[in-house]
Image 1: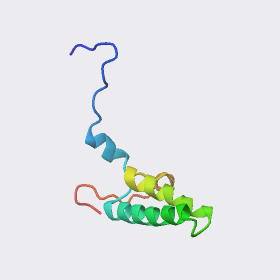
Image 2 (image 1 turned 180 degrees about the horizontal axis):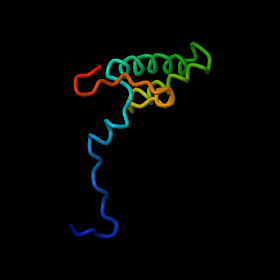
Image 3 (image 1 turned 180 degrees about the vertical axis):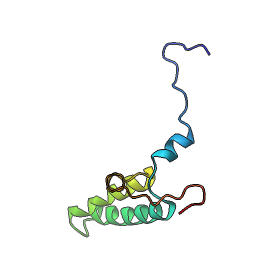
Image 4 (image 1 turned 30 degrees about the horizontal axis):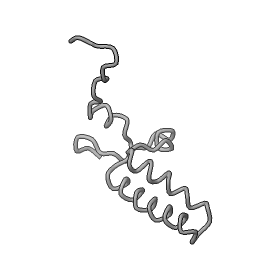
Length: 83
């Protein structure tokens, strides 16, 4: 394959992304739901600025990766039908 200067890099394979993920589907849905609720309450100023921590839930839920889970060695992601 000929590589030209400025050529786009090879696309990321789905397996590479899944290998880094450590948050399961239900966990992601919960994180996104609570993240949306907390962030919307913070923007609406119904609660204090602490509710902006909902952005962390949104970020970890959409990325399927939780740094705290990685440090603690926890994974809620099911692979190949195993728990």
